[in-house]
Image: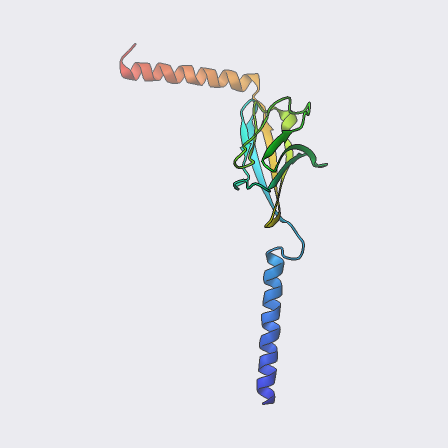
Length: 162
């Protein structure tokens, strides 16, 4: 009987330890689910930072920029508000169905950390996007132009146009 008691006690301790590890790994103890994605984009292109959700009526979607997490855009109760911020100069657009943020005609000034916070009846989710903008210098633009011209000439020769 004592052996059975000891065996059951070990099983309960093992099960308790497993449950504790499971709960901690899923963020139950007050920690937000937090993700980081790296995004690279060429200067003057547009980039979309996706929420991967469909906005519900009571959802609040917040977009923040920089290490100070300054609010730049928000959807709350299906109303979109984009802050007038000189860093973004009318470059921001927010999708009213998903809350995804698009930055148009991006420059190096918009490089940095973007934080998405989704607050709804399920909980509080945070995602971070590290956006890196690569500048196009004049030499690379010139090189690309020459490469395109050479490619067109090769195609014309192969097609028998010259």
